[in-house]
Image 1 (cartoon, rainbow, N blue to C red):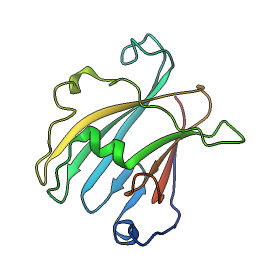
Image 2 (cartoon, helix red, strand yellow):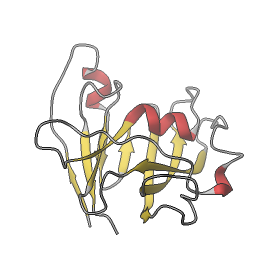
Image 3 (spheres, rainbow, N blue to C red):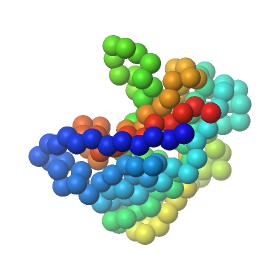
Image 4 (cartoon, rainbow, N blue to C red):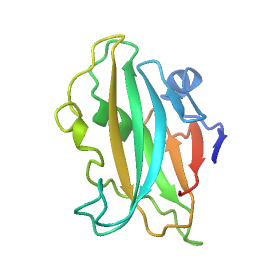
Length: 156
């Protein structure tokens, strides 16, 4: 199950980018890139895609499209715009750490620059603190300062 929400918030430097940006139903759209999450999966420690990890991970497969022609690769594109959280601490935000690449087929393409109008597939994993609490992906265009949307992923 995937749940989407967005909330306002503004700062003088982010108003223009935020107005043209959204994150709904697993699709992040900004003036520069479009990231579409195509699937997600819980991968236990030691299983394919998490062979060397010490924690279970949630892996996301996605497509990144270069909309504006700005220099972007699929890994940098997602890491600069999306953060992952598990809301399992009553006192503090619990941002998840990025794990190892969960799909070997992207080893040679994960940092290739995407041409304007081009789309490249990739995957990313985040280390989980538990395997029950849903994961919130929170998007921003200003390194996490202003939230433009949130999508919640149930662990499966």
